Image (tube, rainbow, N blue to C red; front, side, top):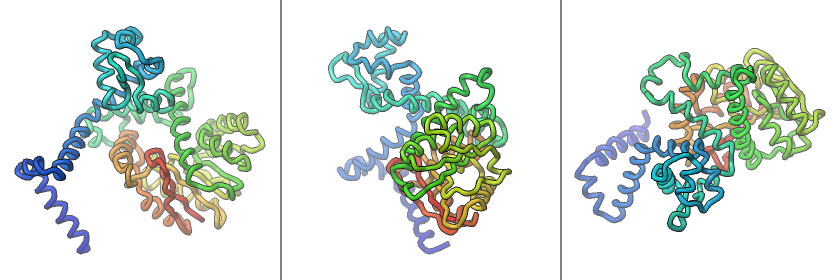
Length: 374
């Protein structure tokens, strides 16, 4: 262990002993600057305790249709209660619960409107779809220790939903699941595409292949912004066929090529100067993720690039999203883990890429980017 690492370990141990001392807490609460820090820590601790309640308030706004109702505001609580099928006191409880979360606002007595965050949610059906989807995660997290002790191969509520073939097939039998899957994919891929378009130059790219591209939501956004691009979609046969047809209708069939196959067992199509992996790598454990990267590397000519875009761990300003949220989400899903840009870059180099670099994005909660060059 280095001297610096030993110093850090000692510092953290001493800090924690001080912070845990009731005497220190009593003293800190009475000094102006220290009191502000202590108050901030206390508020943060309470937010950790109350986080589930906050998320359920948000869920109630989505599932109760309250965002759509408040679009018509200002409205009286009695009117809102009638529209939601609640008593007035229940509606007021929900409206007041959402007020400090900026979901609702009462600019004048009994005149309720959307709050700042509420206006964002109300305008984005995709984000609301994600809120509804998280009910599955919360079911699995009802007993987090039991979830962590279970074999990852054991089915969970979340893993059953995400079973790839089941989510995409049997539309007549599982219409609700298929619709929810499609809505989630469109929303999440749209967010990632926005970050890629804002942070990565694609003007010198001629042919782009999206591996595991689903129904083409990412390629559609990229292809719309860059009409010069020839687009390839590589996915399971039933997925690639549908995705290419949807993309062809939107962007022109001459620009789109479907490549059916399995990215673990089949060769990646060649002739592309950029390949993209969008929210794919973190879905897989280390061994299959490394195999996928090596498979892609074998398909690329020297100088061609691999674009990896997904939420990543240990990103400044988005640390909790990376490891607290996605760490448990992917554990419940039964596969994968969030990785830091440094880990992903190291995996790329181990797979044979000449170099790999991190590309910062404006909204890392949606995605960060690693660009590897063959």
